[in-house]
Image 1: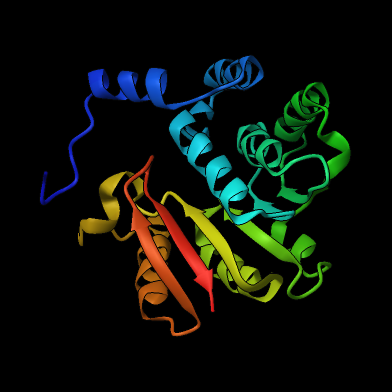
Image 2: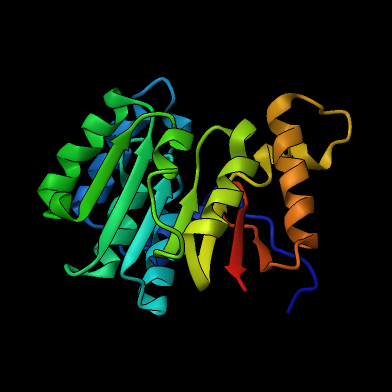
Length: 216
């Protein structure tokens, strides 16, 4: 038993990945290719991908919205868990990154299930219908997190779930001396969510922090 979250060192992390993550060879290839990119650190952790897929399956989600696709690992994890009758919308600004993602989605046989918008997310989200998604994930530019949060509350069905990545931002959200735009945006959203009577929320210490938000 412990009254605080356990520190995860490299040895324990390796154990978690080897023992607790059922990662396909295709998912591992995505991770390995992404590591070589200049922005490779934006890739979610494999244990987070496994958790997100577990949540999608647990909810029986059939419609999924992802804001911030990068090279497609999270979409592989979630849509793969949702099944062949599921549909997803993906929003990202980068053609370079999403071209990589599309190649892996095609290999996985899920490319026809995903409607990809390559544009500023705020331009793409306004085209989508209210109350149409069972599950959503935000992992994009931090300055616009509040905008994406509000749009997801519009787009999610009642009782649907929103997952928000990087809510710890490397731990800087807890440092009052850090007042850069990205840290401030995340800190403000964290505080807003915990006071928002429209939702129920829980902070998880997986990865760089993952906020789970249920729309009431």
